[in-house]
Image 1 (cartoon, rainbow, N blue to C red):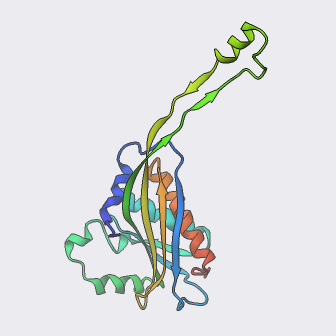
Image 2 (cartoon, rainbow, N blue to C red):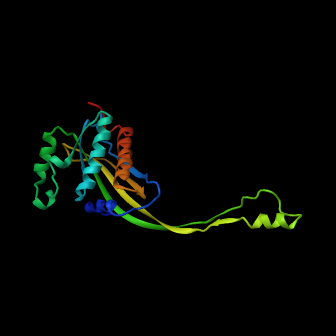
Length: 211
């Protein structure tokens, strides 16, 4: 799937769903050349031109990493909004990242978004628990109070995301994870849930460590 940097902005449009958001890890990969002690200062960047989405995701990742004792900083100081249109030199950006003492670069991108329609079957509720045979009223009462909640169709919105961790010195890809977020109700709830998933994976893989 091709990454679409600006597509993060779709998370800001409208009410996506009344369902609870969830993030499912689809798969991950770790390079055999990962450092033994893990990285201790992470440069975080969300690949989107939507300023609010970028700021929210980067800030949540920064805060969660800091809670784990990992120094982290957002990309805004080095990569200001609209930097792509200004023809920023790649080597200049990489050098600034290194000069700030970052030993790893964490990127987040939305790869794709799909809509999936499914049918939710109706339910039947019968409040009467006793038998209906023997007399008319018992039989009548057994069937009369049946309440039916009709089925309906609902559309799930699925977002496929990728988080990559690169070595700041070699620019080598050290770790990659693909996730699926379903029915995020808002940018804020999505960002927190997704960021927690990313940080938890980095910790479990031994890719980050306290200074």
